[in-house]
Structures are given as C-alpha cells and as structure tokens.
Image (cartoon, rainbow, N blue to C red; front, side):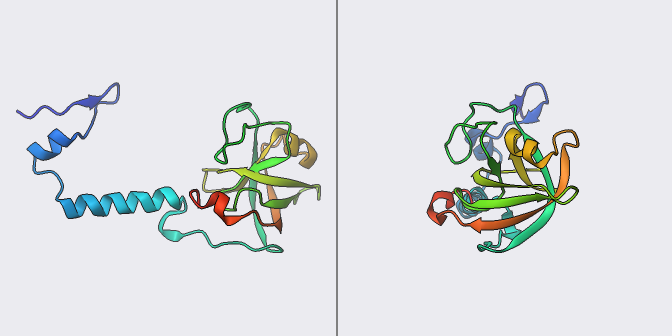
Length: 163
C-alpha cells in the first residue's frame, strides 16, 4: 500500500520529490514546463487573459470595495498599509499610478495612488482605503459602481514583478 502524507486537517495529499520519484513523477520537460507556467502566473496575475496596459486618460468602469482592517501590514508595493491614506489596490496598474475614482451613485470623486494588488474578487475592479471610502460616501454600502480615470501612470519597473 502506498502512503502519501496529507495536509492536516483537510487530508489533501502533499506532493514531495520522493513520492513523485517513487510513483513515476514528472519528466524533466514536464517539470520545466510547470515551472515556466507558474513563473508566468506569478508575474502576471491576470493569467492567460493578460492585463492590457492602460494609459493616462483611459477609464475603467466596474464595482469598487473598500478595506481598512489591514492597518500596518505590508502592501504588494512594500509600503505599510495606512487606512487613513488615499491609496488603493488594483490588479494590474503600476504602483504609483494616480487614478480618480468616481462613485456613480452620487458623483463624489477622490484621487488615489495605487500601492497594492487586488481586489481578488472577479466582480470588482478596485479596493480603496477607509479614507477614500469616506470621501466617496460608500462605506455603508460596502461596494458601489465606479468609474476609474487614469490621471498619471506610475513607472512600469516598480510593478514589473506584479503585472
């Protein structure tokens, strides 16, 4: 009988080099293909669909949410998260990009700087901080339809690893 270690408490098998070797494993070409594929995904969170680079003056429309409970943690850009700052998370805009977020329900707008990655729910396009949510008057609703206008793109090199 083959004994494969599992992840407690879900009992999912945990692959190990020894298990792979004993049970046929992956060929070196397949292993290399997996490594290249996952390296690509790490550099491109949008995956195979790819993220089209936006330009200053372009707009994006969708749902926004807000976050503020992560005070002090490091953002994807390396900065410490500050719920009182006018910053936001976007899946692919370069860090340092400044966007104007307009709440479509009330017309209120705020300019925020992208310093984090997210939101990770497919139905949202941006997560704004607590402070930006106050300006947009969206905290009670939690999510609102917004239009994002790119005012100034950040340098591409700062987000090369996250795009």
